[in-house]
Image (cartoon, rainbow, N blue to C red; front, side):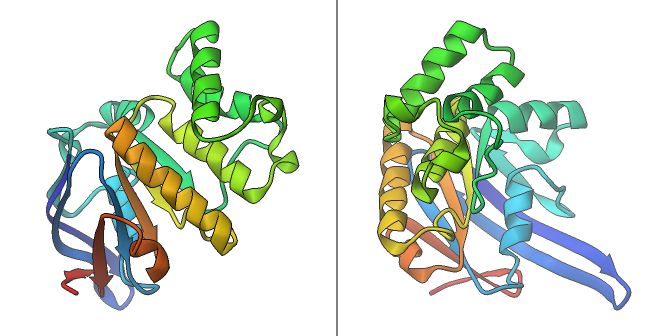
Length: 223
């Protein structure tokens, strides 16, 4: 369960204080794929950074699996980002000189998982997201955009996170491939009992998810 309570983020600027996220409260159960939508400047990116513990809120709380991440120290936050959360990006962010398998294995290696175990888990995850064995040894440049995004999703799942954050996960894909990725994420949320939050400006994507939250001028609005 993701539970956000009265979350606010204020920045200082030459023109004065700017509130990018204002008094937001929301919750998403385990196993649910949800979207956060809004125009540019609505606060989506700031909210995503807060949920991913990449920035600290001015006030409010963020609970993931009953743990308030706003109360963690720097060392605990590093462990949280490594073990409890997965990220999926529009640009995939795969390491170009590593194979698909090695990209998924890397996050497990950073967490101290032994080579045999991480190879077995990475292989299983790639198969789970539809990357066939003959493509496991390929570098990202030899994979299609849709395949690269599947590898990125497998990497995000590697450490069995409670929360996956996806930033425009279909933004670089054609509509047909984007539909496949959305279905994959929805199915994975259900099968892995993981909360998945996608930040997007794509209203069509939002219609295919179970929950949608709309941001406007840093505030959650009802539709």
